[in-house]
Length: 355
Image 1 (cartoon, rainbow, N blue to C red):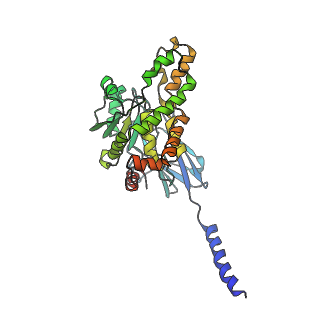
Image 2: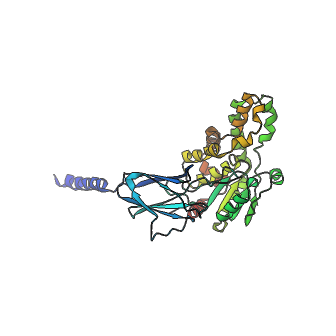
């Protein structure tokens, strides 16, 4: 009578033993930021908490590090290291190796520019499978028509191969792109006409609270009426020879934001990360230069203009929610409207994600 229960119970306890002995997956989060004093602050967290050492290597290329000799070695428990980067590097990349086992590449997301604003790297973001985007492959930016000689030198040093200009033909004519990349693609997205609302803002017919509704309608219009351009954009991105790529519009917060959000969605980056990337424009757009002589307007008008040029979480979130309502999911929109088959998505991942 006891034989059968024993046969059942033993495998069950063996299964529990395996669960208890399974090694917990290590998660490492790393961030890098250029400090006002000219040093790079590199911070890390490990889970479960690790002990030991982290070796830090420095390079001017995101895919090439001299691992024969580390530049720095510190205790993992310290959690950070300040580094004065080599002066010869226009942009340093850092490789962190934890206990000679786990490695993570990082860099400051923002690339310092003189005339261009909101120029930043999409590298480093983790997707739902914990694969990170490669650094130095894909950038988003405000208008390259603002580039000065130093900016052009920086773009050349970054090795930019391809520029995707999302501005209208009129914008491109009035404010020509000053950076002559080997390949330039003009994809004038339909919509996003801020200028047509200035009269209503100045007359105070449109106020700050009206901006959110306007922004959402603009984003929804961009998503629904530019599928042909988005298909072209992804065709470019699916060609590994086109990289590094920079995508830009006027401010780098609307059309470029939609493009970046779609790319991150294809790569299975979670919604919160996509929204956080979108909101970074508020930190890196030079609003004072956009609002010159704004003090001649009433305070309420100034607030409305500032809101017009700002990124709002609800704008992108509600637009993606609308895609889900109309198509069942954002993934369905990507596959059926933008023709991004599972095979194409996997190819883009192989190009833009670390293994």
